[in-house]
Image (cartoon, rainbow, N blue to C red; front, side):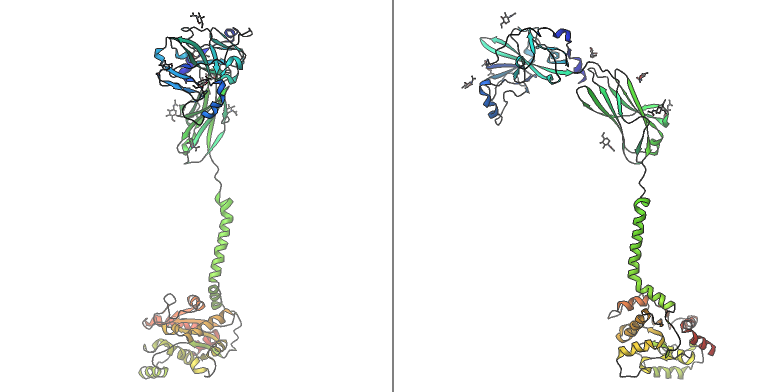
Length: 538
Ligand SMILES: *[C@@H]1O[C@H](CO)[C@@H](O)[C@H](O)[C@H]1NC(C)=O
Ligand SMILES: *[C@@H]1O[C@H](CO)[C@@H](O)[C@H](O)[C@H]1NC(C)=O
Ligand SMILES: *[C@@H]1O[C@H](CO)[C@@H](O)[C@H](O)[C@H]1NC(C)=O
Ligand SMILES: *[C@@H]1O[C@H](CO)[C@@H](O)[C@H](O)[C@H]1NC(C)=O
Ligand SMILES: *[C@@H]1O[C@H](CO)[C@@H](O)[C@H](O)[C@H]1NC(C)=O
Ligand SMILES: *[C@@H]1O[C@H](CO)[C@@H](O)[C@H](O)[C@H]1NC(C)=O
Ligand SMILES: *[C@@H]1O[C@H](CO)[C@@H](O)[C@H](O)[C@H]1NC(C)=O
Ligand SMILES: *[C@@H]1O[C@H](CO)[C@@H](O)[C@H](O)[C@H]1NC(C)=O
């Protein structure tokens, strides 16, 4: 673009007065010519046959060039025909022309003034009878104009005159009449030189642009320039290290521009691949200049204020989440929580009026209690303390005896103390209600027995119903809450209760100190007054 500008011709109003205002003879434009010549590389449009206007429309669907359509004449030599016209075109090579000056093919005209357009080859051809066209129309019909010595004079130039003009010369070669058509690019301009210095539209002076650390950022400068023929406009970005205005370094930039009739909008962009904290310490200057003057704007970068998640969204949302979680936990663990509270703290009134102190529930499938008792008594009669007992005696047998005989509790054993004949479930519920405490001696056999599990379940239900019951689980023979997988599966309530109810572990393998601590813990867990009584008795 830029080198081309040098090649433009300029015509000033004083030259253009020429023939304007004088009477012009009308040129016959209906004349038909069959043979056209154009110069290779120049724009050409074949005039349409005025008597066959309908051809133009019909031809649009067809192949090849249509009359009136502008195109660049290329291959020299061959004749071309056009739809909508009886004429043919012969393209001639530039090199075969008598005189060819490329600068003659474009002209700049000042708007609102008169302007003239010479027909290329002015000096080498007979310029009599030159006819000018713009597109398919003779200029003499369309415009206030005149032709003098082949040169077109437009009495007033308008913005809309920008475009291609054709001048047709009539020549005769070996008896054949030709129209030799040349093209001229006309550009209408507002003025030759800029009148104003550039105006920086963006950024504003001394502003701080918000950036995000670690993110790419574009430094963008938008500048308006006045039109000028010889382009002098320039936009640059500089970095002022540490904000020092005397230490400027040029930054590499990219330019986009948008040209309108009287001004050019330039957008100059410097791309930062990643904003670092260092960038925030510098200042950045956009400098714009043209032939008239210059203007510049200096800005700084600042961190974009992060929208605080916790304060705006996080806090209420977090609370909401917490409440939901608590709700879920409470919902899931409500029974466990109730059992923990009720089994550790005495609800309901324990007035000691109940019939039994302890209801001991167990399942023993080994030798009968009497047999075991007989065996242990005969082999090694115990004196006073539980830990002195025989290792062979199961806890199921020993527990009731210790509670009853040694500690003086009123113990209830289903098969011993409840009269047969009643409904089992009824008996169990009644017995639990008549007891201050329920001790379940748990074993694999116990948890596999539906009758025994029913006792346990009834106890848990009674506990949940705010009765004054105490419950204690005694795990025996390697069973514990985490391993139980009995067949059939335990009721859900029992399963959950097993994990939270107070429990003691009994093991026959444990050393005597562990056994002693078991009895001590058991004693502590017993209903208060009776326990005191028992220890007093000891
Ligand atoms: C083109 O047409 C002209 C005029 O009819 C003729 O003299 C010339 O030989 C033609 N050229 C070609 C290459 O056909
Ligand atoms: C164009 O050519 C066709 C056929 O050669 C002819 O019929 C027609 O009259 C011609 N048109 C003109 C305007 O000469
Ligand atoms: C230019 O052409 C016209 C007719 O077209 C003719 O009368 C005139 O003599 C020619 N001029 C020269 C210098 O050849
Ligand atoms: C543009 O520059 C060319 C070459 O330097 C010069 O001849 C021409 O006068 C300039 N045009 C304007 C309008 O300044
Ligand atoms: C920008 O800052 C400079 C130096 O601090 C000051 O001279 C100038 O007037 C300021 N410009 C605007 C538009 O505030
Ligand atoms: C920065 O500008 C380039 C082109 O100049 C563009 O591709 C990129 O998307 C822009 N980046 C940002 C963050 O605007
Ligand atoms: C400009 O700043 C750069 C980077 O901080 C430093 O290397 C250079 O020496 C400075 N130049 C002057 C003239 O202060
Ligand atoms: C910018 O213009 C001022 C006058 O407005 C001039 O003093 C200064 O030298 C110019 N700066 C550049 C870099 O051309």
